[in-house]
Each structure stands twice: as C-alpha cells, then as structure tokens.
Amino acid sequence: MAPDRTLYFNSTGVNASSADLDNMGSMSPSLLSISGLTKRYGKTTVVDDLSFNIAPGECLGVIGPNGAGKTTTIRMCLGLTAPDAGEINFFAGNGTPLRMPQDALAIKENLGIVSQFDSLDPDFSCAENLLVFGRYFGLKDSVIRERIPKLLEFAALTHKADAKLSELSGGMKRRLSLARALVNDPQLLLLDEPTTGLDPQARHLMWERLQRLVQQGKSILLTTHFMDEAERLCNRLLVLDHGKKMTEGTPRQLIAENLEPDVVEVYGTGALALLDSPLKAMAARTEVSGETVFFYTQDSKSLLAALTEYPQLRTLHRPANLEDLFLKLTGRQIREDA
Image (cartoon, rainbow, N blue to C red; front, side, top):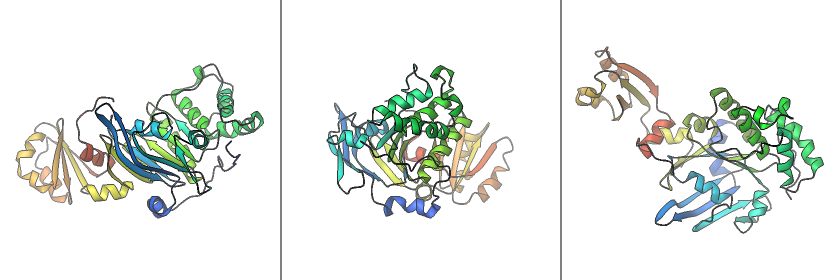
C-alpha cells in the first residue's frame, strides 16, 4: 500500500531557481529510468530504442507529431502495453528499482494518470469519484475522506463536491481528473495531453496547478501538442518523431542550439515572390507555409529595412520559439492520427 504522505496541496511550495530547473535532469537521481525501449506492431516500429530519465521534482515534456510514439511510450510505462525490448525502472526511494511489468502493482501505487480522454464515472459526484478511485489503492475510506476537501480545493471544485459530471464544464472535468490522479499522493504523474480541448482560461488554470505540483516536489511526464504549454511547464523536453528521439534538453537550450534567434514572417500578395529576390540572401534559411514566408536570421535589421519597400506585405518580427523547433525537426507535413 502506498504510504500516507501529506506533502501535497499546500499553496506555497518550494520554488527553485531557473538555473536549478535547467540543470535538474543532469544533477538529480532518476525517479523513472527508461532504457532502450522498443515497440513494434508488425513491420512498423512505433517506439525505437528510446532512452530517457525523469528526476524527482522535474517536469519532462515529450513532444512530437501524431504517430511519433508518445502515447505508446506512456502505455508501456503504465504496463498497459508490453515492450518488445528495453527496460522501465522506477526508483521508489529504497535504492532498489522496481521494474515494469514485473513490479507493475507496486509501481502504480506511486503513479497518477491523466489520459487524453476522461474516464470519470458519470453516475458519481465529484467527491464520490475521488472516494471510489482511492479505494482502488487500498486506502481506507477515512483517509480518502480526509483528503477529498484538499483535492477539491486544489482543483478549484470545492463548490462542486456534490455535483454530477453532467453539471461540469470541460475544464472542470479535466481538473477533477487531475485531482483524482493525486488521490494516492503519487510521486510521478503521467499526463497525456491533459489540456486538449480546453479554452484559454481553463488551460491557464491547469498550468498553474501543474506548476504548483512541480514546486511541491512531484515529477511529471507530460505529452502535449501545445508548444507554449511545453515551454511554460517543462524543465526538459524530449522531441520524438517516428518513435526515435530527435533531441533532448531544456527549452532554452534546444532553441539556442537548433534555431536562428530571429524570425520574420511575411505574408500578403506577392510574398512568395520574395524567395526569388535578393531578400532571401539576408536570411540564414527560409521556409514556406501556405502564403507565408518565414525568414530565419541572425540579425533581422537589414531584412526589416528592406521589407519597407514592399508596403503591400504584412510582417511579423518575433524571437524563435518551440514551434519553430518542432517544425524544423519534424517537418510541416500534416500527419494523420496513429
């Protein structure tokens, strides 16, 4: 049975400096260690010799196109899909690693899960969903009932304790799923696109709650298609494509190592003709998406000055970001859902 820890849900947490967060993956011991993980379906390899680790108190983001292997990796970490090769080790604190799938039950006692799609029980109220889920971990009702008010407060759902799911918005349901994932006070949260389908207000509230959990020492494995979410929440990022690890590092490190610092987007009538003009030589590289030309440059001053001669065009000057990194490493081609 998981120990009855009381670490969670205070509103202050322990803040780490940005330098501490950037170095966390290399400085701290692993909580979860993945080595050589491989999964094939027929002749298709969906996860290909993947290795990474997560340190205590770290949020590791996994980003990649549809079909990159993100969800399959999480399923293997949960013991729901058997790997064809590789090891999954969880270090619960006693020095002896637990191995998936051999020690699946012991590992799951230390995990919290929020999947892409809600699996809440519509017949139960918010509080009842938490109570029933806590029983799956062998927790006594008295322990769960003591935790429920803190969990509902954390999820900003105190006023909805007795409400059925039909009375909740999409954002409320996602917050309840997060609260349910915390009922056993896990060391590691596995979150598979937890904010998909939420409006901006609900997404920002989820971000604030996840940041608080990391500050309190929880570890998070997060998959997401939102690059601003990855940059805001994750200490480190792992970029996957076709099941392979493309690169790994902190968001700032990956942007600095792989991209030019400035991006100038140009769109409007005649924008594509710029690719055959002297302006193209002012950029380190260019890309096209639809009717927009992207100029990636070390110094945008001369390019922006030259673009004043094209008043019919519209321009957007901005720093390079994770979306640029994502598109450079994985391409702009639309992927069908795997």
